[in-house]
Length: 400
Image 1: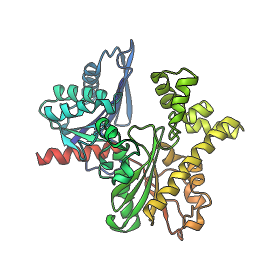
Image 2: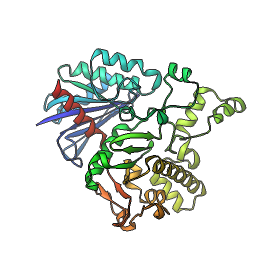
Image 3: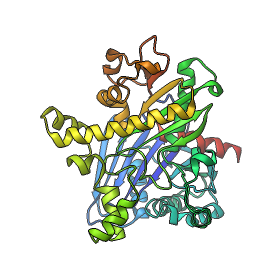
């Protein structure tokens, strides 16, 4: 049996999974783990395999050391690259700009092109590149493939992709709507036609990726026609710690009146806003406990979150004209029945009817939560970005 190794490198962490690319979407990976607190005095590596969890606490000075130590821990439990037939390594890359519309086999030239995109994703692409370069050194004989978060939205029509600012300034600085969570939106949207019993080209759908980061997409016949995130992952829906859409003038106002610097504004809008900024917590399980305890800040944060979500659902219904399905995915979307019910409450005149019992059922994989007579079907489909990346990586490796 052949496997794919999937790596998601962040600024101070590396997530990894060893996956059978032909496995069922709900199957557990052969191995999965996390390298965290890279560059800090005490780091940790966690490995899960065969129903067991193993932990290594040690200093992890950089990504190279972190990945090497992770491989050593995997080999101790016979799930390392030397123990298994790893046919490809798939790397999540956050920003592909206008250069990349599809996954690419990684070469030195591709690395240089990803590096050129760092100004568009200064927090993400450098970390993604660290993981790529380290993994290529450790596994030089295995094909490596880059899968871009922005790729699925590459073909959005100009009316959706462009901002109404000076065209020359926008072009010279790469300012446009790129969209993110593309791998998740694409993966989930590909599952929906079979649930409907329709060919993909006949399906218009809205996908809602609701996690700590959140985004939605309007998809016509398998092609994205709009998405809520923009040039950066900051815009769109209210998120766990990100503001989502705000009046751009707020930034100027806070700079002038509060004396806030660019870095302080960046931290405010990305890390201290959203649900956390309004309630003090960003975990929806904690938010629900606070709501049940009649905490008014939590209730307000929840209502702001739902209001913005409904605005986007409504606008995408108009953009698509005809909607066959609305699908919830990611941590909040898959597990929070209140969010699903409130996001679609009162939309029966538009053909959207939630079945309360189906909606309240435990999360047991892809399922319908609308009534039998709902004209627009509503689904919960667990996302599996790692499986999608593994499948892309093996497919490209086999071509090569």
